[in-house]
Structure formats: structure tokens, C-alpha cells
Length: 313
Image (cartoon, rainbow, N blue to C red):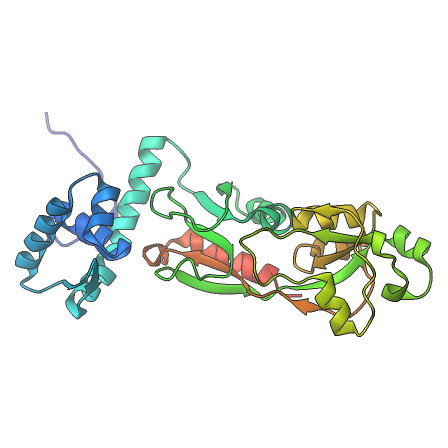
């Protein structure tokens, strides 16, 4: 008895048969191009560098072109290599995404986003939640971690990072150049009375310890110098995260040199008020970063568009 199968119309329009290069060799080529070396590609794929080299030679024989230039311990794509990568990386990423969705039995719209800690809590999560309410099938994995991250190993679709120096080979879109500003609760402002920042005692200045990895962070010393005011002795509470400084200011414990982006919701609700119009820019912008191969992913474009619009005042 004949078995009838109904195939999608898009499938019926595909040219048959497909002309494909050796797929294992193509996978090795993509890994070497993305990581910049045969050794790194071998580590990622769990094979030897010699195996990667053999795959690359096989692919070069297939196309009849040199795909890499060897430079010390790194490899650089030739013009031919760049053309082949541009035409195949997105297809390989789509195959990877589809495979991962099927074997993990998860919704097709599962989206992996990685973010630094305070931004994830104070800014990103509320906006992802709002986006999810507009997209019934959208599900996300939010990973809170420090830079740098490995996009490939952890299947990350999008990274929200402070600066982009750790990701020279990825696509970068500047999200916002943030600034800090003295902020406090309305109750604290009422207790303080007239005089503004000049009247704030040093015991009420909340201190954010940015950590050893930050070298361009704004400080109370810099702010007072810019304001032309004498700085009181800093004897207030000290915290290790900018999000906690904002929370403490909201609780009326003092004045935080708070990031406008992270405090946006508290400012909008009136839970925080600015104590001075004088601001200081952070050393680097917040950036949205993703692998070039994921550029055509529809959910990625939608999330980037939503988050970019969310930064517009």
C-alpha cells in the first residue's frame, strides 16, 4: 500500500538535489573562523588540531580555494573564506537551534540572554517581562554572569554588557551611555530640608564599591569636584553592587550616586527623586552583543528592537 505524505509547499520549491560541501568539514571551518585558531576549534569540537587541519584541507580542495591565512598561532579568513562563512554560518546556526529545540523538547521561542548582575535585576528583567506579555509563546533563560562569556558553549543568543572590549569578534549595538546622579527617597529629601547636596552629611552618602574589574567608575570625589563643592568625609553605608545602593536610597538610608538607567523605574514611580541635576557619565556604554551568525534570528531582532526602544526617554 502506498503511503501518502503531505510536504510543506516551501519544501516542494527547494531545488533538488542539494549541492552541499562536506558538512563535518564545514563545521570545523566555522569553528576555526569563529575562534580564530585550529587549536581553539579542536577544543570546542572535542577533536585534535590535526583533525581540524585535515577538515579544512578537505574543504579547500572541495572549493578549490584557500580559506585561511596562517599567522603565528592564529588563522585569518581569506576573501574566499569570508564569502563562504557569510553564506553558511547563519544556516549552521539555524540547524543548531533547530536541533537543540528538538532534543531538549523546549519551546521553539526559548531565548538565552546573558547580563551583568545589577542591570539584570533593576533594568533588564522588568523589560523582558513586558516583552513576554506581548508574545504569548516567548520564553527566555536569563543568565546573570560577569564578562567575558562563551556564546557558543552556553548557547547564548544575546549579551547585555558594560562595554564591548571583551568581544572583538561579535556584533555590537550600543544600548545606552548611562550616567550617575545623586538620588534619594522623598522622605529623606523632606528630612534633609533646604540646602540640597551641600547639606548632606558624609554619613548619609551611600558608597558603591564597584570592584577590582572596574577602573572608570564614577565616585563621590569626582562628583563633588565637578560640582565645585567641598566633599565631606565618606562615613556612610558601603555596598558592593550599584543595585543595592539604589535600593538603600529608596529605603531612606541616604543619597546614592545612582545610575539613571537602573533607577529609571524608581524615578518614574516617584520612589526616588534627584537631589541635583548634575550628572557624570559612566566610562563605557551598555551594549547588546551577539554572534554574527545569529543576526537573522527573528527572536533576536525582536528583543533587540524592544530593548533599544525601552532606553528612549
